[in-house]
Length: 344
Image (cartoon, rainbow, N blue to C red; front, side, top):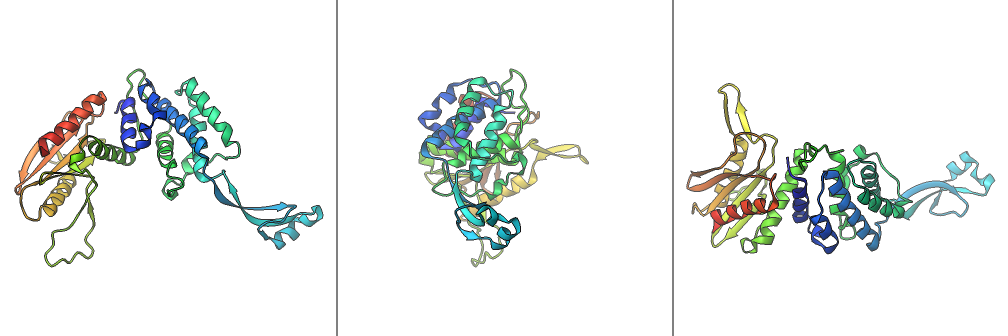
């Protein structure tokens, strides 16, 4: 469970646009519910997008019209007797703001407007923005094809807004414990993991530029150079400083440990250890020992909190845990300590 305010900070790092002046007021507000936080961000973002201009796209239409446009559909015109009304059925493309991305924005805004956890001021802001969406249709929330959305230079500003929409709709509607400022239920672990991974990467990029943080690809250390059919290896975060390298693999699970019911024992997820060890040994092809690996788990409610260091085959493999359910200053201290201890 994560404090609601910390979700804003994680989003702010993952999507740099939240650091713009228009969003600074949101960062200082107190939110009792995640849905209210998302409503505040969307209200600001949609208002900003309206100023820049809503995205438009060509939409195919077929209808009987008095002034022919596009391609005349003769068979449909005859079948509908449209010529009796001095009209022809035409197939044509209309350049309209009733675009799929705008439909998602409107659908999400309307869900939040109807949500009892959203405060009145934020509902008013969303309602005001929706006046510019009068020609935009709503869509069925759980039928949205998220994987089919494509971003390019002309619609890049929508990326953050649609990610907020995803968090709202896929977690719909978020249930919170009254007064605790924690999320009792969040979106699926896969999407939350991506946010957690992006947050850690961008945090190190901003506060430790000397580490050249990146999601680096790792080459297989193979004899003869034959790599056909080998899977690609890409780290979540790679930090480099003065000849030392730290590969970080972020993990966001409901359960940090795996349980062996036969032996009644609990261990780290074996595939996580195999993965980070593989990354480290292939990057440290020279066996210098200057490459380290870190499994960085998000803290759960489990009793066991991994915090271990191992020296395996001459390389340090560490397992650490970040508590996201604390003041953001404490999260920053935890991330700073990891970087300073393992690289400096």
